[in-house]
Image (cartoon, rainbow, N blue to C red):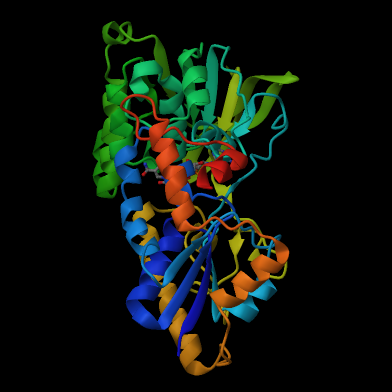
Length: 439
Ligand code: NAP
């Protein structure tokens, strides 16, 4: 019997799930991959940094899956608005949420709503041309930027803020961000972390890139570094990252003069409030000490000047009415991907915002096993479903303007044609232009 699977979200978690379903059931499965946007690949397009093109190459693998006969891309369709989860459940044997974690976790300190303060979802979305954030217009006319968080997103944001003009050659940064960053006055970028070097989440390859920037030099205060002998107890990746921090601390002042921008790591500093009137002017932090891995405030505070702030402290998924959600963790309530028989979650919607793109692969393969178990045990009713034919009927009745994979290929072609010299594409940053290019 043909199995019908709806996957909501066309990023890495979605396409690995489609690939796993295809491997598991071959010709006996039909998979529809829905996306709100008319373009596929989720974070590969709108999250991965534009100057990290080699990471984006994984989309060729997803394209292989998307082009097979039993998998369809169903773009420009918002589940929860154009079609309800209940309707999907009636049409498909299994509905898998691969919706990621698109919302910024709030910092929860006073002043967060001041002007020129952004969460990383918004700021990264701006330079990557996500239609929701393309109009963000951050003010880069000031001298100092504070980036909060010690993860890879903070590193991406700090690195992108330090780059200009030719440094973006070969990237797919969108034109509005390229122009704004090239004219930026920012000279001081402070990465603020509430814990110390042994607790950073930044990975070595990404940290190492800071040594090779045209305009910027990283700085670490040697006083923040623990005894070198203690690095021996770290897991190898973290040990390498800490070695990079040590080399940043050892850069002589004479070498710093060559580059106009500094990326300063301010560790053991926990934000307590953002200051300013109307627009942000500073980040007040409390000095911390780390005890048993936890940041403990010392009561000593100081203010870091900040003409703009980007908070990179993690993300939350979007709840969908009627689908059990773990509010505290900010993701769907699930057991190994199973929300309920028939309803599943993969990727960040399942685990929260951790791991690399490759981490989504076992998620996708695992959830297909859960679906198989639920079909075999009868937890998912054996009633025949209409699958994609049923969706097509509903879409026609409702006038839903579905964007197919073939339509996307036209958008892709138009973006490639519009690219600056040496760039892979110039993305459309609004939905209307995407749809126009697809017709
Ligand atoms: P992350 O790795 O979890 O880092 C979040 C950072 O925010 C941590 O340093 C955390 O500090 C800090 N933080 C959390 N709450 C805070 C608060 N209230 N005040 C101050 N600091 C706070 O998250 P991410 O950077 O968003 O990255 C998400 C995932 O995407 C990660 O798995 C990352 O590796 C991946 N990613 C990978 C790449 C790449 O491979 N190139 C690029 C981007 C993202 P504590 O540790 O003290 O909580």
